[in-house]
Image (cartoon, rainbow, N blue to C red):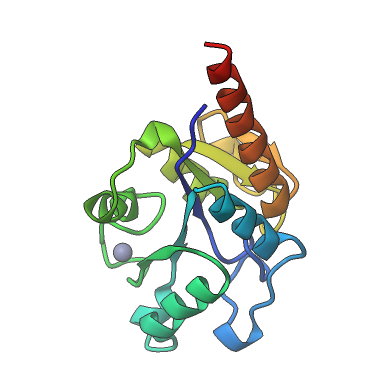
Length: 179
Ligand SMILES: [Zn+2]
């Protein structure tokens, strides 16, 4: 398994409570920033992947949100700024943000992972895009599991998800040495 891109949800995955938290009040979970840093150090791109209806509502500045995600260690951020009923193609579980990432970076979906706390948004987006989903127990936890098809890796939190990815990447590399 070769992973080159990891998408991470913000609210309930990097930190916060699973719902919107203003930038100034957003506290990452223990290990989230270190986990993102460890992935980056291994040469993996980490892209934030987030729905933020507050931008459409005029309660949040997209540029400031983008900058705050870079400050948490992400290499880039893909944000749906639209209202829930706007009918856009980028609100998770739709895959428009993944398409946007493909326009900017070269990677295969087989080399990508989506880490998120929401089955309905994050894991369903992963299923639809053919990307491996890692579900974390922080944020929304088990809510919505029964309505979403797919097999996902279950991890306690973002730090554990990053560990899982690095372990599986290492196995691949070790295998390659032995042909
Ligand atoms: Zn959108």
